[in-house]
Length: 295
Image (cartoon, rainbow, N blue to C red; front, side, top):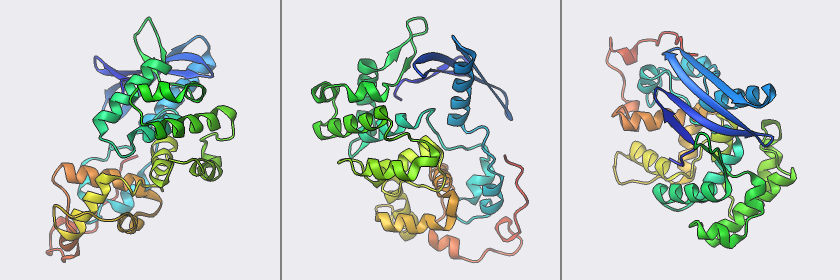
């Protein structure tokens, strides 16, 4: 929706920058169980890094067998897990892009947030004249932008300051948004006014691939868990109730959340009362689930 990832024919295209070097990445799926990612750049090292970044974003190399073995019989998400073993969490090639997006999406409608992001990408990002593809603004570009410039893109003044401070932390190297330093990075980012738990959990899940994080304060989850646990379509859970629900999925909470959304969108959502009801003998839910072959 922000215009960075483009569909071209039967494939996807994305422009990245690796250490400032433009990398044009293309993705095709010639078969259901095969994904091909190729890149074009001035140096082989940058092209290889671009391929790795895009494969991470797509999640095609993640081995999810443990998750499928554990939860394909789950009363809440099991049907969706069995029906859609190909589902992956949507991620970004660089965790900064998730943090950048999450700050703009706080407390406003998604369509409005996307419009703000597109304007900031056009104003501060990088555009390849040959392809028309764009890359997101780098942290240094956001850190160096005047608050009024960001606000002119539609960002609330307080969030403009938040985003500039976050960009400054990354541009200086004080925050790296790397997996091994996430705990320290999260503490430093949390000290910035306007960055709370939801923003950090979005960054961890969609930027770093941390399946053990779920953005429990997300309005979609507050509504979904409220409806699921009470049976009332208008009910809202609180953040603690959302965390309590997903605690059953342990290190896989973030992925379980994506399957729960899918279950709701495809009519496979089971309420808590129905999940507690004993299964009828001989039904699929009463049998021991077979081993999943998903990877």
